[in-house]
Image (cartoon, rainbow, N blue to C red; front, side, top):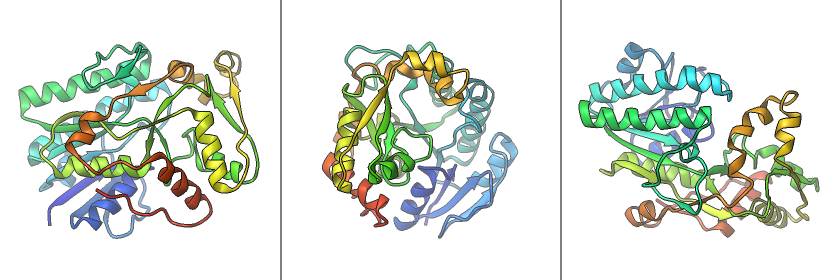
Length: 313
């Protein structure tokens, strides 16, 4: 049994830990609180502290970075994210482990057309700049310090296990089940790259178990938000209504709704097509990736209290 250490037990980390256990690995989860993750060793501590990280990653075959800063604000990202990342880089190098990072698409900024792993990182917002610096730190550590890493970049999350801050949160899906309308942002009819959470988990596990290194776009499903609302509602047996919150509302309501104030920075992701090419991953890991129809049915089933089926891979 090889040891896999997962930092963060949120919407992806906890599911990843369970998946790795099911695949026969010894799994250690590092998180801020002592809440249990069934079947795994749970350790609490400050992941910004290099000595702590070195201790809990000793002997690991793979280390997974599934953490976010304690708050969604740009200030928290600028202050916390670099420290979290550097400690994990040092720990992975010391233990000769592969570092697998859950990443997002912020670093690309505004792009005309489809993003590939070779698209220049040109974001200008605070969170985007943090992600650009993180990409540079990984590449520098690989070049100068012998780090082995794989970064899995995913679209906006939906599906079983999704967090409360996601657009397609459990509260939104439950509202659809109750016949309520969903509030969307930007252009609800523009195609958008979404990451189905079980596919994100399966993708990270595959990166951790393989010799694949570098940046990969995790499996994405491209669908307009309004169409996804309608599909999930239909699977729930209701009529899916949605209303668009215009981008100007970010400015007007931002002073009163902190989340909207922060979302102003990435509003461009929602007011036009936001497309991602995941062909590199799918060619390397054939069979990982759920169809939209199945993902919608499993999302609805989870809302209705039935467990989603395991995703192959």
